[in-house]
Length: 460
Image 1: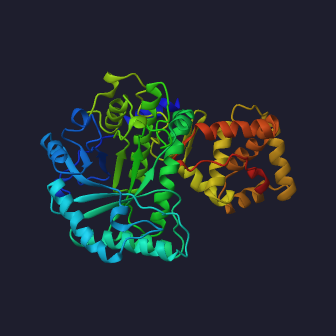
Image 2: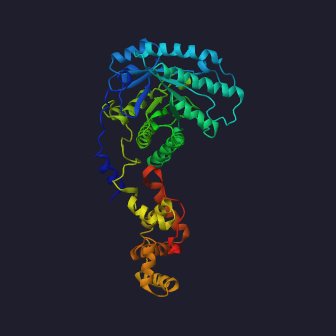
Image 3: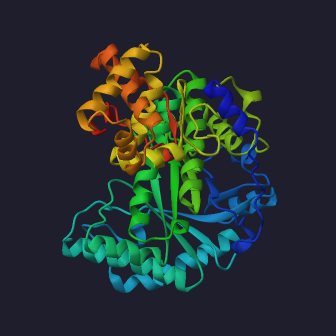
């Protein structure tokens, strides 16, 4: 069965439940919470964002009230966190943090119309600085932690945006754990659109998912509740900001926006993340001006929920919501044009192969090499050679030895056939077929086969 048909068939069975309005301040309580940047710099916010079904991040009072009047929910967006906590090289006076937190909460409550608001804090600096920290960075980290604690103690829910290669070892790991008790940690997951789009939907989607999954998975490994973690996606137009970077035509840019939204939803659902944010919609200067921003925002909304904006009616782009996505039949670990590999088959072969990945690689290789013809008599000779060399010519001893290792005679014959096919093709051609299968594969959690051959026949 063709892979695209399988994916489309499975996707047709998916049903997305509506968000129940049972969260704080009447916000949706479903995970993840989708939040979109909608300050006054977003010139099209009334056209696209001022509507029911959206949660919008803004500041001030006039703009948020207007957005709520249109049916949207609002949370507070605080630009330039350094105003309250300083920087790693010049931390603010620790004695001012509590008062600053109280002032920030008052503004956020007035802006959002809620006494216990969600507050986006953009952004923390020096998240990758190694320990031991300098005295100034230690003071800065103490300020960040205290601000989060003060806001949380007063009933607010802060969301701290971070970026870069997070330092999580030793004392740094303990600091992140302490932070997560008072604030959500939102990782800035920004990408260079031209490079990503050039990979095509399968590899681009995989690249996005792997990059989004990596930092939040490292935080989860520290014991941090995934519900206190999130992603923020960047759809900037200004050069040098890891966004559009001049990608043309507009359909290619919209394809990139769509794949970002799909990747974020996949990773959030897998890990149970609490929120997904978007920004880059604002225009702060001439270099960031982009007439296609409304189209990109509409595409982002449409990808999440086709009722939010009719992107296909506004522009021509690839509207597939399944190409490159991890939508697999139940029980299937990997699917690719040459076939599928079942989770149960990987689990059964893994003890003999030495690891789940070795088993997966062997099974993917089997399907990738299936077209190489091997004569039945060559298979018979290979098996007899094994029986005579290692089991004294006794098929009974041979079968008992296989059973002891969790294999049947059919398993052994298949493994021997794989080795003969690889030999017939030659190592280079066999590796090429395996690499092509891996490049086109859709595998659970993007856990792919290795790109080199595992000759399990040597283990028989």
